[in-house]
Image (cartoon, rainbow, N blue to C red; front, side, top):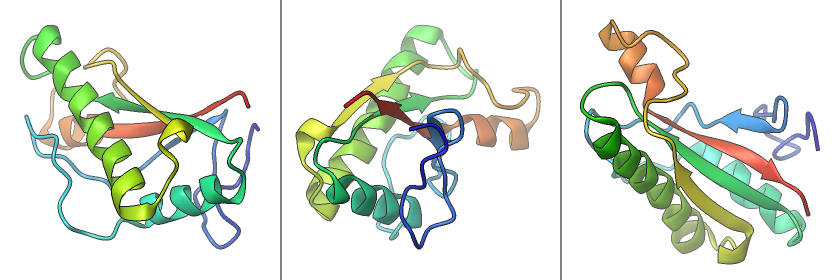
Length: 130
């Protein structure tokens, strides 16, 4: 599944069996998605619908503001919010998607700047074996 394209008409690809859903944004301390139509959710839902044997894990991340305990809970809530949107709004089969949170343990950027913290607040999609 390495390098698998999420959807034929989508530029988003899995790199090393994972992809960052860069169009999803979260405020500091927030887990809710806005009512926006996120292309990454549309593409992922379409890709999952093509083969009900496909499975993914959504992994939530945070910046380093606050304690790891609070951030672990927040990152889990972010992943759950994305899972809920896929299932409720896009018709994804619930059993195809799991959610987990890792807090601030895997930053993509420095937590020393506002821009870096914003980049670190994210949800990634990880391919799971069929």
